[in-house]
Image 1 (cartoon, rainbow, N blue to C red):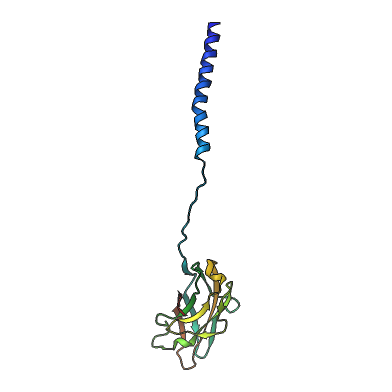
Image 2 (cartoon, one colour):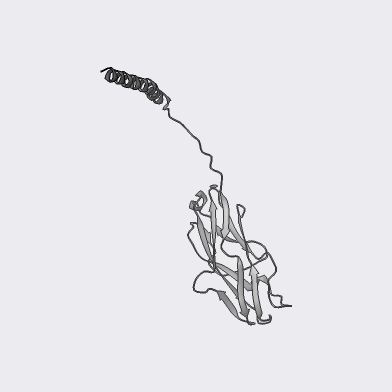
Length: 181
């Protein structure tokens, strides 16, 4: 009987200690639950990403016109800007054209056009001559300026002059994303 009473007292003490510890914690939890306000600062994003900027036209004969992947597009470019301002995509040939030894053809022999895009802006969709200075390809639309990912697909061709040397032609293309027209 003494053992039974002793266990009963121990159990009561144990329950009392638990209640004494848990009740204040539960009460304080109610007091600590306040509305918490947070502010988030989103950094402006302004980026361009190209999957391939090297154009290889292969072996071309004088007077021949070669289009890279004529049934579809050759490469695609991704533009993202959440700055809320108009932006412009430009294209040009920054380096020397690689061709047969001693061959010099003008950059205007190479042409580009926008094959397709998913943006709301304005794109050049007719064949344009390349230049060594950046020329306008795309002007963003209002929806483009809120962080939407814009994909622009390109086609390229080489119209080799009849007076040029036949051979293997290639070049690198540069793309520029800017806020200045």
